[in-house]
Structures are given as structure tokens and as C-alpha cells.
Image (cartoon, rainbow, N blue to C red; front, side, top):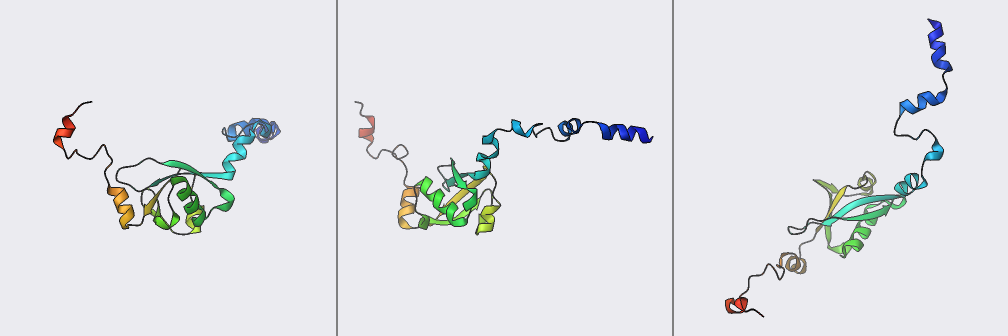
Length: 147
């Protein structure tokens, strides 16, 4: 019985490598540079502003070497066109508040982040003002006119 064990030990290492993890390339030289470098340098997050009317996300890229709460806030606000002072809290959807750098370090690619804005008069007016297509026409005669 000792001989079959010796047969297994004498098999070339390549035969074991292929079956042990099919996701790894058999030859490290086959790995593409973009597969190993780009994904490691940036964290891609899906970010949006909390809004009852708009639910689309944008993707933002953060340098993994500079992950922090302040950096996430700064980059997200820049991409969304808002001021960091307008942000009350940052939420990882569906229900987790992000409060510190350690929370940001735990994020993974394509997680959904929502910025909750502070309530003040100007943002409430902007947020709850209906668009032109949503406003009913106040002059019924004007609404019937055709050009």
C-alpha cells in the first residue's frame, strides 16, 4: 500500500495546481496587468443623494490608499455637485450609517452609498419643488391653446 502513495507524490506539480483552484491561471505569466493592478488601486462605489423622486446612482472611484470618511465625502460631493456642508449623514444601503474611517475601510466594490442632506429652507424648496412637467397649469384657457 505504500507504493500508491509514492505514485501520488511523484506526479508533476502542474497536475495538482489546475484542479485545486480553477479561478487561478495555471501560469502566473498569463495574468493580465489590468486584472491585477487597476482593481487593487481603486474602490468603486455607487453613490446617490437620498431623494423621493430620484433613485439613480453614479459610480465614484476612490484611491484605496486614501480611504477615509472625509475623502469619501469630498469625492462624492464633488461628483454629485453638492457642498460637503450640506451632508447630514452617509448611509451604506440598506440601513447602515457610516461614521468613521474604519467603516469606510470595510466597504467593497459597487456597494451602494446614499448621502442624506440636511434640512434647511433652500434644500427643502429645491427638493420638494415639482418640475415644470409635474405642475398643473393654473390657467385652463391657456392649457387648451395650441400653437
